Length: 377
Image (cartoon, rainbow, N blue to C red):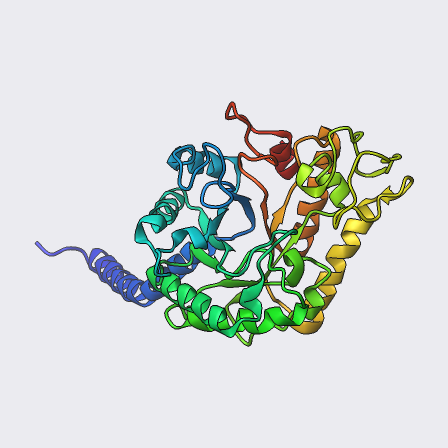
């Protein structure tokens, strides 16, 4: 028994649409895959990060290199708070064998961190917090790597070998050439950055790499940065200004325990007898105003430089934070100011730090007022 003509016509139409859909599916498949790949790439934004301090660098007491106080559960907690990446400060000097080659056993915690981060959809910035001949100590610091060609070459070899180890990692991993360089002259930093970048590019031609400014990655020295001719670089800078607020009572900045509370915004009280003279104790006159506008102006100067020098350059405030003794509400106001200025310009940031003196998480595992200041919680 034949089917009615109307039924046959409907079947033919259905077959036609099915075939057309199949063809379009094949054609669009590449687009869908590309979109999925793009989405996967874009999921690593590097906009809101936290520094894992005193784990693989600046170790002391029970916080030895790679100590078990930090692990996968910590990474999961960080992701749950709304962060999208970790900045991982590593003292590369501690990762070297006696002959100067890399010690793979010391790199194991880095591999673990990348694994934990990927499982929680977080990116990782591998930050060379110290390199041989390059540290950020104010007193007795080592800056030979910027002027000693033999030492500079040794450091370039270290970065070449380090980059090779991680060459197969995807966009979830970024490199930071050096944390807070302190060269004697700002101009000395530019050839150093270019040489390290060239070593990295031998095995990582398109990985995002952060270059920085001199004297602790300061906003003020950005105009002396000569950017390498490379499409896959970003500028990282740090901000702890005004230091008298963010580091109040911090002994390593010559501030004393008897310092009265400093508010932000606010006016400095008489600080006589509450600090020892040093590099960090300028501009502490009673009556000095600490203002939001002063912080905003510093951001705008960098923004103007970027627009003049390389429009569209990615900028990353890789460190900022407030030391524990600062008044809580002032702490929140300063942090909100920083993240707001970053958001206004599309800049990324990473707060200092996870569980140290500037912590987003306290000893009981709870979020601190720093976390509240960052996310308004």
